[in-house]
Image (cartoon, rainbow, N blue to C red; front, side, top):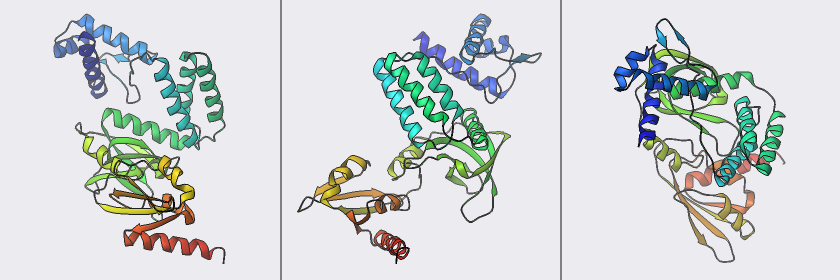
Length: 318
């Protein structure tokens, strides 16, 4: 129980230190603990960050990029799960990620034997990716704003449109399921609703002086899980049916997870996939990827869209 209390106090302490400067007696009064307890927490933060918590005459504080993360102990099987996640990250990384590289170095130093070697090999592969300092800087700023609940100004470019400035509260950051980009999900003040923005299309990210209140993101996460790509938070219901040829039936079963999916065996060994999606645009590329082995049964709007795409592709080879 004491560990839980300490963890919750340190979480709140980190939040307060990001907001303004505090002196230990002020913090002790706020938490109802001794000054020595506060000092131990500050020392703990310093150990976790690898540098002391900064202070001046006004007190202790944390800069936006400083976030103490507590150490964790992993079992062998937990280490394997984390290594799998890093391998999946590598597979989708088309650019060098210095933070991912740093993490792999730490994992390599902590993992047992063969796992350590695999972590080092993964790091070697990641080093071969090209660098993109602009994207790396934006990703870090968004991460810091997300953790500290800071409103930011984004310069964002949509396909075929000029860059525009958006005031944005970052609620979540999410990797793409089928591509190498990542997405920021949060409240767009200009749109007046929660929106998803591709990080690769952000040209700049600047902090504002404004923060935003804690948000229960459970409903947003649930809506995202219902989309095919896992990153669209729009509402809607499109009932989709796609038939697959026998040659690909097993692969479809293995590569088409969705909470609403249902399979039906067809005569001759084919497979029918039925599911419900909020939108269809992120489902289209996946269907097209199966070529002639897939046939859309419903809805008609999806049949027409796929048909047009197939005709356009065929015209390139006429």
